[in-house]
Image (tube, rainbow, N blue to C red; front, top):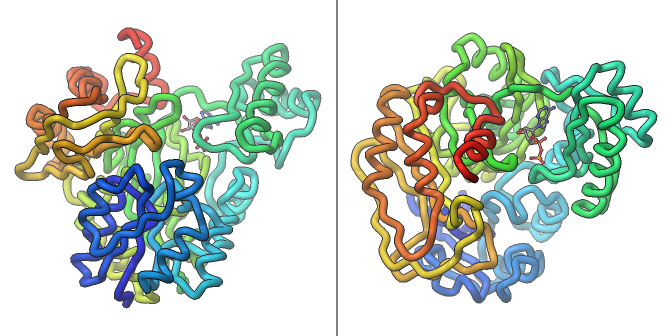
Amino acid sequence: MFDKILIANRGEIALRVIRACREMGIASVAVHSTADANAMHVRMADEAVCIGPNSSAESYLSFPAIIAACEVTGAQAIHPGYGFLSENQNFVQIVEDHGITFIGPSAAHISQMGDKITAKETAEKLGIPVVPGSAGGVPTVEDAKKVANEMGYPVIIKATAGGGGRGMKVAKSDTDIEVAFRTARSEAKAAFGNDEVYIEKYLQKPRHIEVQVFGDGQGNGVHLGERDCSLQRRHQKVFEEAPGPCITEEERARIGGICANAIAKMGYRGAGTIEFLYEDGEFYFIEMNTRLQVEHPVTESIFGVDLVREQIRVAAGMPLSFTQDDLKINGHSIEVRINAERLPNFAPCPGTITQYHAPGGLGVRMDSALYQGYTIPPYYDSLIGKLIVHGRDRTEALARLKRALSELIIDGVDTTLPLFHALLAEKDVQTGNYDIHWLEKWLAANGA
Ligand code: ADP
């Protein structure tokens, strides 16, 4: 087992990894930009190294700065958290070339799931159901029309190199597709430097269901059920829960089994998430994230396992500490993402926290790097905390979330908390009756 791990990240996820290290008796090294000198992860880690100026490109994304910090502190492994370098295969390769362990999958596995066409092809080969669509890239608008007419409208045009919801356009007819095709291509070119696009059947009212998987890199794979993350704004998740309110035990066993087998066949090492759109009882693969997800705590809550500890163990060459049969769902868990943003437009709202009080009590977990007097810098993501609740069932979890939200105080900056107070009053949220478009429609109807 490692003696010392460097965490190439900031904010709540850096604290999450430091906590796992501490429970395992492993020393932790924080890295930070100059803007983050007073951040909680710097205070909480056993050691901290400043790796550069405010801009992420020169600090949290700088390969040489992070590798040098490992060498200076003697850290044997790097945990990337999520975002930043967590899915950068070049970084993984360079880390490994320096004799440092990357806590995550191999560069080859990251690359297989990197661009969307390759990911879809890989998924199909592994027996994972995918959204019907073009076989690979679609070069011209004539080809696009041909594919769309064979498949039937509506269709969605997506960037091969896509991410963060960019480069996606829906077309409902041959007239629409001319503009949609050109816009998707130019957006893709601008955002990713690659204008290749492909076409998929556009599902009209799907839910976003993702399966948590884990592999030990030695041919064993398990699944830890699903999360429903359908409540999204601009393709960004805001409210996540496990288990999925509409997924039956049989469906879970079926799709979970397919995913666990795929992971085993790949020889995949570490945590991963296989994302699906779910409509009328069918699952359609959209992508795989080869890292820990923001919303992993809801899975931890219902299974009672520490996913970061497990990541560290398998990276050190140890076997998984549980088998599929050990994994039993207990109750229901919900997470809400709290952003420093001003409603109704969700404009980023950095600033100084004048008062902070975290909720507590049975079944309440607050993952946040906030403290009173902390100044949120304007340079990074606006996520400032995650409130996670656990109850014996969905009704209890919702009541607990409402109670915990009423205890939480964050003063000094605007946050997305009022959104959750309002959502909990909605019947559809109370009954779990929503698809991926529900929140956008609700925001439009409620003045956002
Ligand atoms: P990104 O990597 O840019 O986030 P994804 O492929 O994960 O792109 O898709 C993001 C979101 O876009 C999905 O959660 C869903 O809301 C929507 N979407 C993607 N593909 C389809 C599709 N075939 N039909 C309907 N909606 C889709």
